[in-house]
Length: 283
Image 1 (tube, helix red, strand yellow):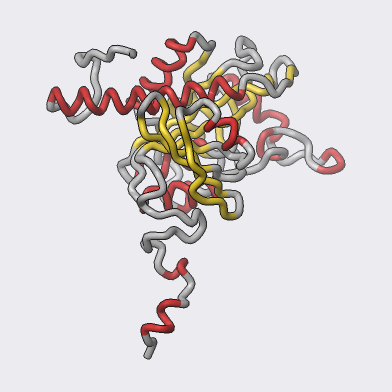
Image 2 (cartoon, rainbow, N blue to C red):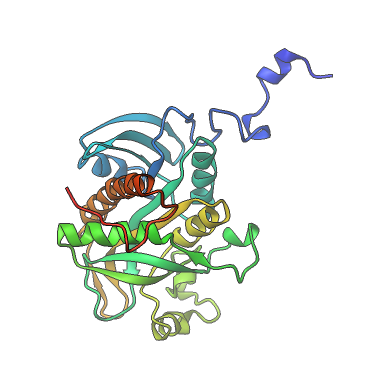
């Protein structure tokens, strides 16, 4: 029989619903209801630089969390590391402490010729080439962005005057073979040489590694999620520059503020969801 003293030393992963989360090391008081999700922990400082204020709340493994305000609206950011598995852990544990809105903020490769380096891509849906979401739901379940989040991201990009595109994003598990790039010593995975052309023909806009897992989990759990990425490379033109990262950060932060305003307007109108009949005035 397990005594109370033994329970105190149990692995927290045995009880994933405990207040302090096992991987993120955060509790309900550490985060706002809306969280930005960059991959790289080093991006956290770039994110919070555009906020009114912030405080670092936790840093464990690839997961670094800070909370503050943007234009007076509560906001948090948690880095996820690379790929769907670690991003899914972040969504799971953030949801357990009360987060209801997630916005992936990152970089991507564009595959349509009209998309320039530095442009923003606002995801409306995802091609689930990553395997994480397959462990949650059947493979034909769609990865869709919440339309309120998409609306807020578009409104934010318009207000800030940034060039942006909306459309379908492909999320892969591999940076190399899974995105049609050669592996070590020129290794080519089956079908990799045709991959980008097939996606381009289907009007997929960009390739990255986390969005479809985040969107799928949020949809399953009835939460809001979206994604915005800066184009670092255009696979069609061969252009590559690490440019415009702050545009995605600023747009996503403003979108959180706009979502807070949208939620307030919904409450005042007695509406369950945002719709075209509700006015949104930008401050």
